[in-house]
Each structure stands twice: as structure tokens, then as C-alpha cells.
Image (cartoon, rainbow, N blue to C red; front, side, top):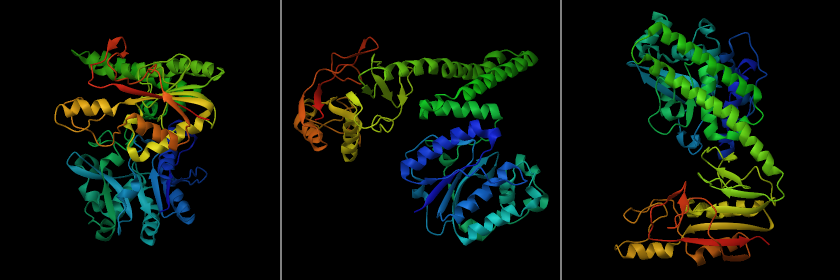
Length: 466
């Protein structure tokens, strides 16, 4: 199935559009889809109309589906494949928001099939000249063509003519349309209740959208902000502007509690902007210093532990983390460039079917004679603990009184040794206690506090690449 992801933005929206495009490329790479950015198409209409020209151009290039994402929206979850939403007989996939007692189909994010009916729909939208300068542009044209204006929230009906509001729904088009969960297009007016896949900052001023997208980006890929001086300066200026506006509102209102209520969200944004502009500089200096080290050492899944002299990698953006990414996908490290990898209780969280993939990736980046230090929960002790309670084996994240969670892995020494040999490690010995990570042994301490005592111990192994 040939699916192509795309968006459109001009120079006025490039700071926001580039963040959106960055997440689109990441989503496309995750599931093996194409992604094309066509910013050269121009018309004498408002820029929002250019999405129709872009989609038609991608249809002509032979793509079976085009997945459109507005430039003020971004992927924040990369675990669900849009292909699972595709059904036979359905050609258009979009979200219909429900608020204020009505429904609003959102044409800002949608998947469309390359077929005769959808090409004709795009032509109808483009030929709806009455909506060229409408505040909703092509979304208003779609409401007219589909006959869905009658279901709009009352607060929005004044934007359309009475003749359009009385128009009946196009039954043929509705039969070919599938309405997706709001997780695929979560907006402030109708946020998703399930885990958000695409966050859409619609209905917000430019500064608010830019700051909101930057906040989301910090949890996706902190390295994106490296070298983006213009973006950080603009974010800081917008933050100061928001603060100034909120102070003016406070002066005008002067009601009890209004100061905290009005200023709190913008103080939060300013703290984020300070962290983005100052902490990121410190982080970059630290990373540059590490690059000069003769030995490259990776601390994978470091959590809250900062190891001096190591490149800390974790999916959570702690201040000491150099790369916010999956510790199982080291695409930014060349093969044979790492001397030492520490991975403490990471393999416990890897499903058995993907275990070899993670180990092969670590093996790839290690130099000859490079070392891999691994710690996992010793399933031998776990089994003994549960036999006393009349149960089977427990998982690495559970206490003795909890049930195992699906997807976790269990090890004893022969099992772990076999897995390491299968990916190419030859010399495998009993390792030392780890320097950091989610250590589950009784003697471990994190942030100066001893962890809760466990009825089992950790298994430490050192493997050498030859």
C-alpha cells in the first residue's frame, strides 16, 4: 500500500511548519511510508487552498493514498499505523469534532484515496469560489459540498449562508467517508480522550501555536533545537509578549485570584522557554565536550542518573540527557564507533520477538573489542519468590503481589548468554555491578534514597565484540 504523507507552508510559517514536517518524516520512517514536501506550488488564493493542489500533484505521481497534515499539527505518538484504519469502500478518512451541541468535520488532517470519486471531490472544492476568502477556506467548501453544515454547532452557523445550512447531506459521499477517533486530530476545543497521535493547534494565535509545538517537540526530539537560534529567539519574544498581555488583563480586571489564574499558564511557558534557551546551550556544550573524548561511552536508558564522561540516552528529556530517543534505535551513531555501552534493566522491557533487533543494534555501533554491560532481573530468584506464594514467574516491573505484564522479558544466565552469542558476541563473562540505571538490587540507591527491597537480585553480564 503506497501512502504518502505531506503538508504545506510558506516562509511566514516555516518555524512552525518545519517542526510539523520533522514529525511527519519520523512517522513516515517508522512505518515505511513516503513523504513529500511540495512548497513550490502557488496560487492567487489564501495558502490553505494549496493543499488541494499538493494532493492532486501527489495523486499524479502514483500514490494510492495521501495523508495530509496541516502545518500547525504534529505527530506526538508514533505507535499506531494509519493503515489499520483503512477499510474497503471507504475513500476519505477524517475527524469530526463534537462541541457546543454540534459536529464540525475537520479538513485539516485527513487521509484520502487516489480514486475517481475523490479526485472529483477535490475539483468540486477548488471550484467553490464563494469560499475563497471565507475564514474556513476549503473546510467551508467541504461542508457545503458534503451537505454537513446543518450539523454545525450553533455558534458556528453564522459563518455560512442559510441555503447552505438547509442543504441535505450527500449520502454517496458519506458512505465513502470514515470518521476517525479524535486521537488523530486532537484540538483544544475537542481534545482526545485516548492517547493523542496528532496534536493540532487549531484556533490559537501564531505565538501560542509556536510555543505549544515547541513544548511538544522537546518530548519527541530535543536535538531538533540544536542550531535553531532563530526559533529559540522568536519563542522567547512571544513568551515575553504573552506575559505583557496577561499583565494588562490583570491590571484591567483586578479581581481576587485573577493574578494567579491569568499569569500561571504564561509563567509556565516562560520557565519552559528559559529551559529551552539556556539549558539547551549547556547541554550542547556538554555534548561537544564528550565528542572530544577519545572513548565513546553510552549510558542507555539512563533515567535520572547522570554518568560523567558518558553520552546519556533516554526517551525522557531529563536535563542531563544528551539524546532524547529510543535506546534501541541508535541511528545517529555510526557502526563501530562506541567503546562501551551500559544498559541496565532495558532488556527487561523489550518484547521477546524484538529482542534480537535491539541487541544487533547495540552490536553494530560497538567497536571491535567494545564492551556491552547488561543487567537484567535474575528470573531464577524471581521464580523462587513466587513459588513461595504459589505463583509462576513474575515480571521485572511487578512486586511480588502483582501479576506479570504482557510484553516483558525474563532471563536466567544461560538464556541471556545464548541471546548475546546469537547476535555475534563471543566473549561473555559475569559483569560488575552497574554504574547507573533502573537497578533493582537491594543495595541500589537513586537520588540518595535506597530503593524498596526486592525479593530478587539482578544478573550482570559483560559481552565483548570480537
